[in-house]
Image (cartoon, rainbow, N blue to C red; front, side, top):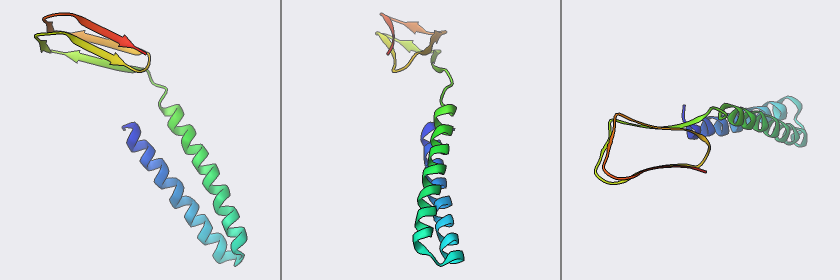
Length: 101
């Protein structure tokens, strides 16, 4: 699952759960100030938990792979984080440059 998809699911889930808590609390207590407080508390708690899930889930090692490429000029792999970069079964006509940031 891509990071963008996970973020979308986390955002949608947080809003839906907090909204349901807001409605349920308001209906059950008829105290809307308490409902808004519960809504905010759930939104912060669930949002924080989902953010932790997103952060922990993304701790896998990054990688970039080039396979079976035929490049007449220079090939450059650039990665913003540390990880593994490989080039296999490829023909490169000039320089191979691999950078990590």
